Image (cartoon, rainbow over all chains, first blue to last red; front, side, top):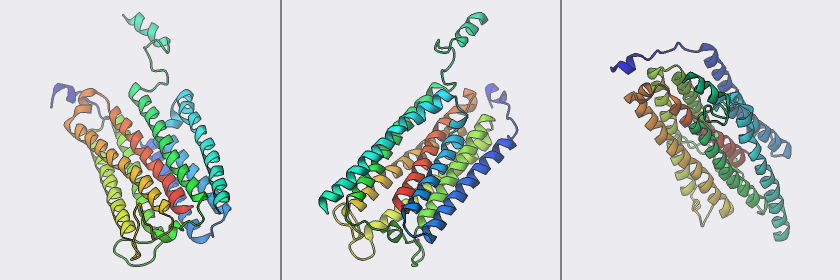
Length: 107
Length: 221
């Protein structure tokens, strides 16, 4: 062991933080489990699709905010990451409309 | 000397302090992940466009209903297992980051190891899934020109989207291994911080995040 390495102080386990992370993990598991139950129990309807999209956004929120720690960063960084993604919503609307239009032309 | 340091740190853009209170490397990782998010969005949105403009589309639940070592019809079960594996490896990654904050080399090694195991398991599952999809159920299987399950576009998007995601998982495993190696070598102990674990952790969580979207829009909806 070099003299530099011997200077390192290992801090004790941050129990509150780990408990919080485990809680987030359990939420992710439960939401995924619910998705499965719905996939089996519900017929394919627009309502089911909406439920799936909402659940996906819930999972994405927890991963980005807690696991990737973005929820605890400065406001500027948070918005720098989230704001450009609004463009994706426009892309989605534009291209799905286009898809419907192509369908109408073809069939 | 001390007075000049305090003078620069009060000025946010003066170079004394990071503007977003994150290091340069972490900020650049966020910028990269944002651009990668656009790439994956483009792939998934174009999947939607082709699906909406097609006359028929296979029900994914019926296509992906095989599980290794059984011959039963178990829709989505195998994909579900893969999803849980990836979430689990995300949890071990976040525990490695936490251990890094505490300068606990042994714990970082332990959790990085399990993260790598999770990544390799996921990739192996995906290899099986691809192989099964390509060989099919005796009706010619699926490739870029032919698809027994429905329109050729369905197979093409399957290969592109899960393939592009799988490439990300593969490079994530390689990065995780490098970090694990450096940790074992004591590089971060000598450096005095474990920020590299955090940066690679961001990438690894992003890979998990993308799978959450692929799972919903490719397998569930």
